[in-house]
Length: 291
Image (cartoon, rainbow, N blue to C red; front, side):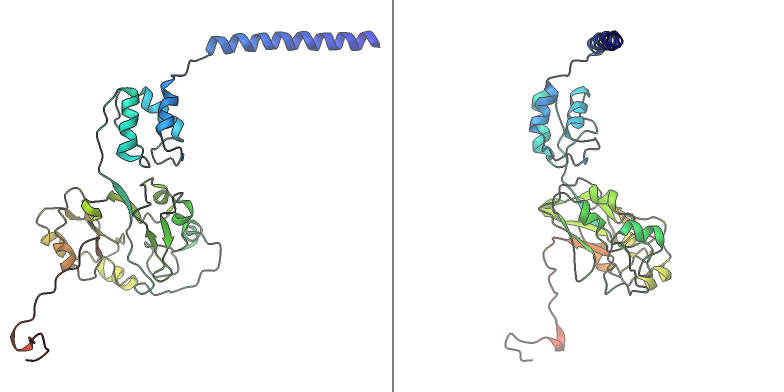
């Protein structure tokens, strides 16, 4: 009995030793030396692992930067141009600067503009509602109001407005990582150029229904009237399936489209207040209020 145990232990030890040697030789043969520059790049990255760069974390992005012959398609939205310049210096490469981007909510369907047609009582999730039915209002395209986008934002850049029921974006905190875009089942959030002085103009609607149907569902919907297209002197607006769309690279921020939109579906952000034309004729008054 004792000899059986001894031989069993001996065989196990021999097998273990042989396996260890085989594993060592295989590991040595297939070992790949990691480029030390990867760690250098990781050190200058934000380290938030948000995935906004399109890679599975900062280290994967660093590996891509080291291996790529150029920075084509490689950009860290959190670190921006400053971080990318540091990465370029580490690797001895050149990187073109990019204009700042920001997430925008393309929905004007506030509680005032979209009457509630049904009451949802279930999990607080836009994804769940989207999978079940068209939502609590007559618009099957707009914001569902459960804040899936707010929940995934790792930078505290989004909150739900208690008055309108729509998400609000904090421009000082938004890093254009795109997490909110992926989380929105309706696709109402879009990444656009932040614009000079943070000014931008965009159609805050994604409803592609015909004018009458869209207007019935939301008073601030784009009704595809085409007035903005005709008014734009720069060819920055086109009609796409009953919906106007403004190309942010062509737009010169003249805001003429905003003035002619009958439903106020076009938003202007961070512009100074428009001046009011003085009243002339018999209705004009003196500074003291007299005729």
